[in-house]
Length: 196
Image (cartoon, rainbow, N blue to C red; front, side):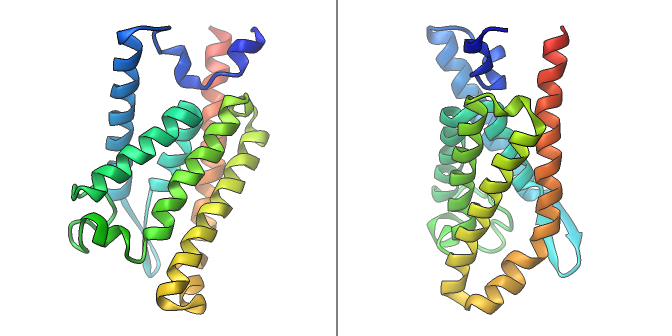
């Protein structure tokens, strides 16, 4: 494979090279990505006192597959949908919708998802999505940044101790599993394409 192909994200294999068809495909992928994010937010896995979603896995997968630009654009579109009042986030509309929900306890985590997509997308654009160890490192760094942003925001609302106890600690192991899973899946898909 040439160096040019090795520096493109996985989604580039399915995109038209240029023209209206390319932009239509990008728009379709961004909208499909927001639907996947919504489904992952609504999919709850109950492990102990807190409900966990598959959203972190979806963000990591989208960013690694779409790359920096399309990955971040997809997350920003998702945030815009939520800000407009669409019930796209976890526990919406039960716990509120729109800007009010986004400024609540999950605000830092939501902003962290955008940064997470940027970090992982940047790595994918550089070919790290073909190597599970490099991709795991990038995804782990993105996870730490997202958790730190969520922790800081939540600590400003309920205090540092409660923020750690309820907003970070219960999610460490499950999110590590999601990072490992995403870091294994994307390079495996690349390997399948390399064989064909």
